[in-house]
Length: 78
Image (cartoon, rainbow, N blue to C red):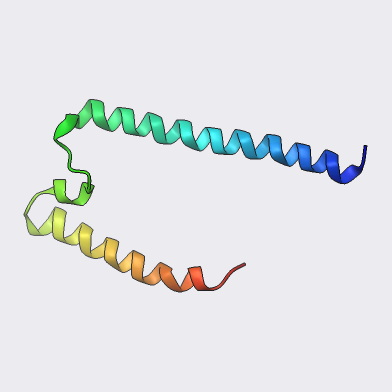
């Protein structure tokens, strides 16, 4: 068996574990959030923060800033 094939199989095993772990973390977080807040949470989570200035507007503004500032990073591949 070739060395590169062994490296590939090790990578594939590690990749599968990492993606599976991320899926478990997302599913656990989602289940915990649903158990905490119930079905009343909006699909767009920032809409559930309320109408006040501090929680809703500040978080939405920061989110827009992060999206705008991270866009140039997508244009520069590693």
